[in-house]
Image 1 (cartoon, rainbow, N blue to C red):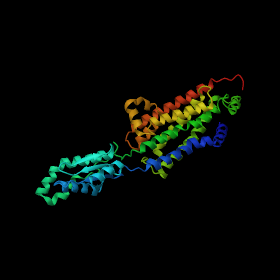
Image 2: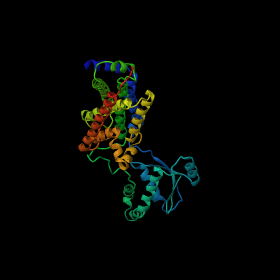
Image 3: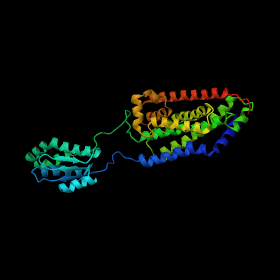
Length: 375
């Protein structure tokens, strides 16, 4: 048995495709995601350029002071530019500004499109309109408090902090990296694919020689599974360490605490590849295409490309992500790093374990019943 494991290991580490896809590709993709979205700070917001057109009315000073206070606030949202009506219209058309405030007895707003900047400008105007009477009263009765009143009205600083039920601060970009770990686990299917190719005499010359030996089929399957799983588990240990200690992503749980999810995830990827490769007599290209398609669809549903996809599936078709290995791995990591939900975490691990047993059993049954009239 040990000799089977030894020579299977040596053969696999010399195959470049078994090193690149399960290890190098996830590392490269994780790095690319980190530099594109991993350093996004939700508190960073581009200041909105807006023009103000004065009509020289009695209310001009009040509205101008309000806008100036909003602009100079510590959490500044807007960059106010005084323009004539013609200049403002031209700037709005060119896209140099996102809106135009018109001063007067009843201030108004003109925007050139719809979106978050325009919504914020509308919110600022509505805030002024609703508090205008209050400002006028303060100006008449306590002019010395005018500046404080305007500051209070224009304070759009953050007043809430998004936290999980367990009290940990959440980051919306973290979901992408949890799904990335799920995808990397499933990419163990390429290692499992090679193992299955080496078990069926009609698929490779090595398998033909093995089938002529007296070794029991289960011995071959267990040795191949052990080597494939060990290799991919090492891949996942490297990826997890890279994410946590090099990129310093939001993986708040201890490294050891995340290992059970990674262990069972690695096994899922390997056994899935072995099972798909064992089915039918399709060519190598077709089977590889099926594995890639299955892995990417599962990863997409787990939120790899868009976090809203996983939430939508959970709301509308919850059973789908209960049988999706990538979603289960991602959810297990979320339970550890964000939620305080040990029961849900254990449920994910149990479902993944059952899947592993079913895939391995299915592979054995398919390979065992194969008979060859001539090899």
